[in-house]
Structure formats: structure tokens, C-alpha cells
Length: 236
Ligand code: SF4
Ligand code: SF4
Ligand code: FES
Image (cartoon, helix red, strand yellow):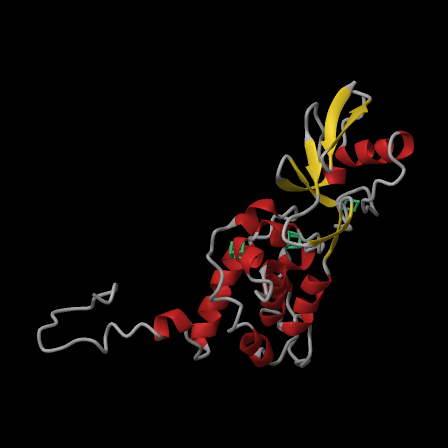
């Protein structure tokens, strides 16, 4: 028998169960019929079974379970029940940042241009990136990782004729608020380098005439007087 903790309660599970989702299903069958959790495909495709295992975001169906492991709900999202969290705020962000095709171009689409957005197209909406994000933790208005990476995917899509509405939407509570900590990229089960996409979005924003508001409000250059002898990044 192995002993694991789920939502702060200890359960014994048969040691021949090695998968975290199977352990949850077994607990529901044998020990706690009211234990709430989500799953669908059981094969890492639907994104519905994302939880914290020992404090790290994982797909339960794709994760091994060991003695003394601890399963808890994703962070930064309101708890509905058990391991089920409310992600409605995150789904709204896809609309907010216009993460879809809205102005079809007549471009011929090459395999090369499809390859550019191939990885980002694999997002399974598991919410792990939001759970790991320190900015979303303190600011629920932050557009956040997967909405930004999806917007990037459509901005780079040759079928999209105009990216203006997407770029406009991500200038506030968006690309410039990210700390580039990389937590989102580290936990993504689809190996999407979300942090890198956000860096690219910052570059694309600058190329399209937008500015980092933190930088544009730095008046170090304006403060130069006759005695100044160079750029002072700390505004002394
Ligand atoms: S890199 Fe940016 S979006 Fe990703 S977890 Fe860090 S702050 Fe959040
Ligand atoms: S970007 Fe990765 S971590 Fe974020 S929701 Fe999509 S698959 Fe999950
Ligand atoms: S059940 Fe679908 S990803 Fe785990």
C-alpha cells in the first residue's frame, strides 16, 4: 500500500497503481465518492486533468504517483470543489486579446509558415501556465501566458491579414507586465516556450510603434543638465 494526500486528506492506495489519475479514480471508487476532479481523454490530450503534484503543475493522467505524494488543485484560480477550479476568467482572456482569425488574407499558405505556429497550436488549455504565473497570482487582469501565446500564434498566421486589434489589446496588462520568469514554459506539458513567445510579442509590438510603458515613463534622458555626462539608467 502507498499513502498519498489529496486535498489535505490521506488515502491508502494499492501500490500497483502507478498513475496519478488512476489513483484519483480508485480513491473515488473505494474511499471518497465525493472527491471532485476532472478528466477526459486519459492520454494527455484534453488538458482537463491538470493538478499540482507535490506543488508542481502536471497532467494527472500523464504523471506517475509515488508513496507520500501530495495532489492539490491548481493555484491562482478559485476553487469550485476538490481538485476542480474555475477557469472562466482565463477563457475570457482569449476573447479579450482577440486570439482567433478575424481578417482572412488571400495569402497562399506554405508548409514553412504552418511550421512557425505549429507548437503554439498544440496548446490543450490545461491552465498549468496560469497556475505557475507570479504576475497572474497578483493581478487577475493580466492577460497571461496561454492567451498571449495564442495571440502570438494568430499574429504569425499568414491567414490573418491584420494583427492590429491583437497588438492593441495586449499593451495593457499584457506583454509588458510579464516578468519573463519562465515558469509557464517550464510547466507546459506541450513544451510551448510561452516566455519566448512573449518576448517575440514585445519585439513585434516595438516594430509596430508601441512602447514599453515603463521605459517610456523613464525620464533619465530628460533629466540631463549641463553637468550630465552620460545616460543614467537609474535616474540618479
Ligand atoms: S514568463 Fe511571464 S507569463 Fe510566464 S509565468 Fe513568468 S510572468 Fe507569467
Ligand atoms: S500553453 Fe501549455 S501550460 Fe498553458 S494552457 Fe496551453 S498547454 Fe497548458
Ligand atoms: S485526462 Fe485528458 S489530459 Fe489528462
